[in-house]
Length: 82
Image (cartoon, rainbow, N blue to C red; front, side):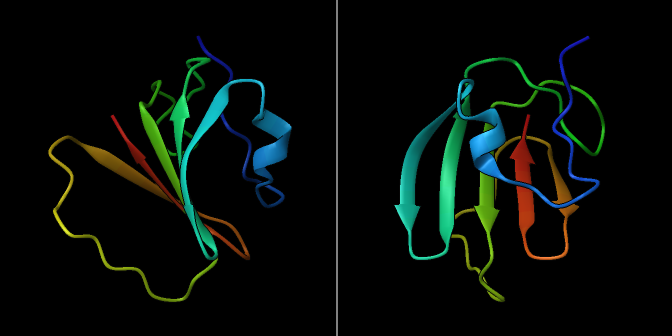
């Protein structure tokens, strides 16, 4: 099984920079691609993309067209699509 993202003590994208490719960054939010096959912190399955934000409100233009999971740390909300 793939290494699961560890969010038990917060989340720092730099801990996983070898396998996560930055796709877009806007203010306090970023979209990353999972190139290493890391496991989702919520369900353990590998995920495709990761959204990380420390913004208190985020709006998405279109709903994800695939299943997704949410994981929350003290300072960040992570949205993972499968």
